[in-house]
Length: 102
Image (cartoon, rainbow, N blue to C red):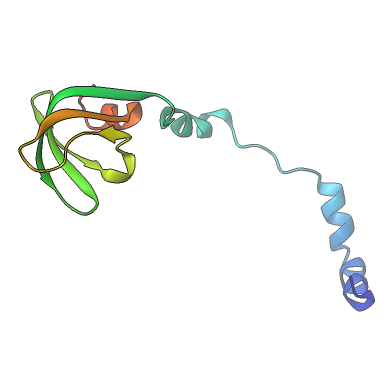
């Protein structure tokens, strides 16, 4: 670090203040809850799903008596290729719950 830059921070006390303040405090545990609920490690698999429509970024499927849009970025596995196909789809559990099909 150049000497003049070091003096600038030393003179303003910024370095000492940063060292004295210690690590940042963690937010309360309640703020972690939404992240835990959106874990993508647990997935739901649905069979006898019919592909109604597809766009570049999403699939509209008929599952559990409802038509539901799923973002392709969240679809873990499927064998649905074109509208009218019947097959399976695997999505994260949090997404299935959010869409009201689980």
